[in-house]
Length: 237
Image 1 (cartoon, rainbow, N blue to C red):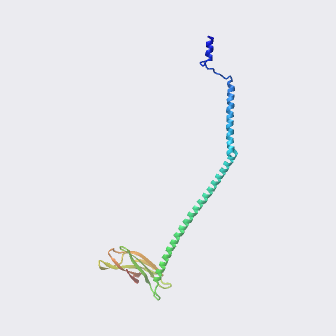
Image 2: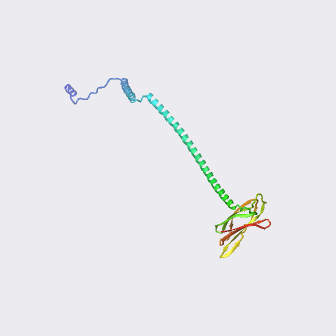
């Protein structure tokens, strides 16, 4: 029986043996902590060594970051100055453009006024009386049909001499033409208008007439306060 037991223990079918460590658990934890600390220290050393090799040490990185921040702040300041200068230039350009537009408008107005003065000068030159002519006169009578049933006119009533007496009276307009093939004449209502001047008075206006009339001439008569005709002039259209 003993032989059978001994042979079973020494054969392949013998039960497995388990070798257990007799180290206490606190010592095991201490060994594991030392191993982990060594691994962590090795990793930190490798990281710092890599930073030194790449030139990324802490002091240099902070200095570069501060320098980059200063450069960014300087660029922002320069940008703000440039923007301020651009805004000022744009404002000046707008002001200058507005001033130029206003000056151009004034120049156009002065040119128009100059043309009007030249026209008036030419008109008055044509109206100058011949030498030796005395008494009240009607000069430069002009008339034109400007629309259906409308006629525009202008004339100058004047008294030659250095200090003539003041004239008070009126002027009357008479239209002549043809209506349906027959002679036609009419003094439109409201055309008798007051005159009061010493040297001269320029007169202009628009009168209306029947649209079917063909106006051929306009007559102007200047009447004094007593009803006497002092001057008259006709113009053919």
